[in-house]
Image (cartoon, rainbow, N blue to C red; front, side, top):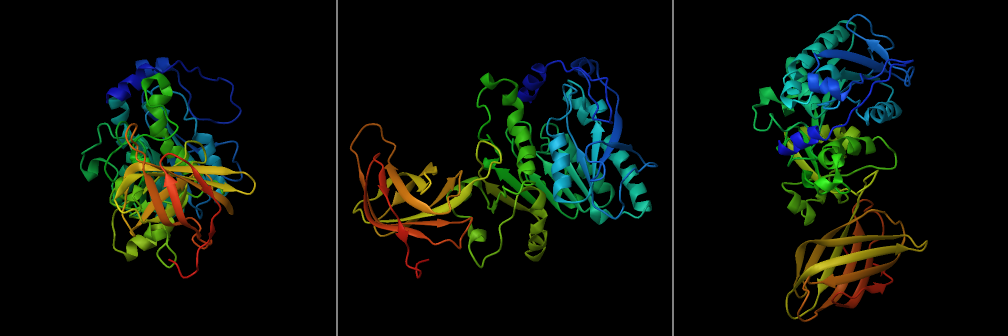
Length: 451
């Protein structure tokens, strides 16, 4: 809560634009946040027929809304400045790019705009009631609950849950983007988003130590980078306003990345982030095993698998890059050593292709234990996926600043891609790694009989 109050105190004045040619998201000032606003919900429709100019709709006026197509509602959260969400336009256009659907912005800025978070939170059930009345009319006109999809951000995720409860969990899908934690953590299912609120509920947790909800809330819960500090976000208050909202907003930008063709983020079902980082939960990426769940828009491809396995709730972990589109490419580095004594340390691996592109992975989150003739499989993460690797470099380090330098005698090193398991695996034999000294070599194709 402390971080939340700091966030509010740093908000700046936002002025409204009186000149509008198309209906747009309500724009309020920081003054409105200070004095408070009464709840007023405005629904704005975008379709491929009017993707750049919204239509204001209600329970009697439906505009271009096609009752036979999917209708996706976007519900924002707490707005302490009164400004429109910076990501809203990209989300609308991204959804329309991937599917011909109805996209409805649920603008409850008059109600969400306040410096007192509790006041905004107290209006969430009222917003849900407004949505229920509108969806009821869609059903009268021939729409199906199966085709109703609600994307809720922060407080909006719990609003989506409240709507789902009123339909006994028969909504097609709910996606919660870092559901709000303050005032909701520890609450019973009836007072928050819950896996039973829709036929499929997927959640992205990106700020579980501050503004987001910590525990699982969906049929599948994604925890990017463990759900804590996100790469590229400020680590201290010196980062200004971005420090308070960057982790929380990252869930939205990760979802947006799933709408782009050049980024498909794979997640790995696992009991803990530590187990994922140690490579214990990547069986879904192995050929002839089940496919891995995808983050974001296409997460519901995993719905049938969950039903088959009779698994009501699953946690999935993955890492991201610092910048858009955030994709990380996973490889296993298998190392067999022949040192007489046990060695403990970390490995840095660098890949280079013939064009000179270089990508690097530091596998140093936890010291690896290298024993004689024992294979250690390390999960490496790269920002680039190089199709044809020309050279590989390895650095072994014990992390000791003072003391003797050690050697790691490698009997065999093998590199295998998880993202593209059909690619030939690359090997190298009989290497001696001097501590903290880079060893560069050309790999060779591993014998096909090796696993």
